[in-house]
Image 1: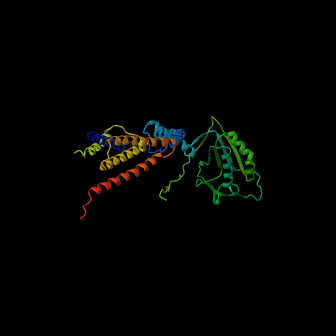
Image 2 (image 1 turned 90 degrees about the horizontal axis):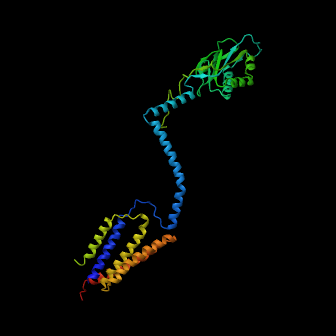
Length: 246
Length: 118
């Protein structure tokens, strides 16, 4: 019967179309198969809640990308930015000389001061460290002793041996591994009044007077500015490099 | 030629389905799959009745469309209710398909059975 035959053929065609559609279904669309309306609703609400967080992360990532692009571009702008950053780091680490307001402290043997019996040995490195610590706590932005700029790796230490300078017996002093002899001149950049006030309050003049040392503070303000030298000693990594394989 | 016409129709249909520029998204996959299962069940049922010489085109046609649409609708409603009703349709049609296949097999084997020596 033609009707019977064509009905079967038509059904076969329809079934084929359905199978064909199933074959080329868009399986790259959202990889989550939602088995129910409730699951889909939950997923949608979670996605809506996540949107602002993702937006913030995206904005932060874009800002970071822009910074990296600006820093890495081979243009005058990127070069100047790197130069500016380098100067800032050098200034903070003491690799550049410093000109500005501040104070200069001279510590020297004064034969006119009365000799106090029994105190014939002075550990000058300890005395210098005390002064430096107080100056740093008072807000000094840069410090140098007898032309040796103090940086984070600097040391002020006594070494065995006697100081050739006049006055009580004293061991030799090394700053930045370089020998430094009395008289000592400590230069400190910062607010001159504040630095001098803190030293006065600590009573350093009286303490050094007991040790036959004169402690004189000179204030430098514009136009007479203080000049501190740059650190010229070895830097970390000069003799050895970090091992990345360790 | 007459016997191969449904097979040719099936191949033509698959080609058409692949050629139609409609890409259903994945969320409709379960509905279409259940509908296909129902349609396959109807086809096997038709083959079985044809072998039993009980084939009725009207029953076949109405069964095809009704089962396909009803199973897809059942899966759709189930998704709204939070119940996996598509699974129920899959189980039901799966059992029917195997039953129909068994009947077809028995019918074919019965017809082509080797004559006994008696």
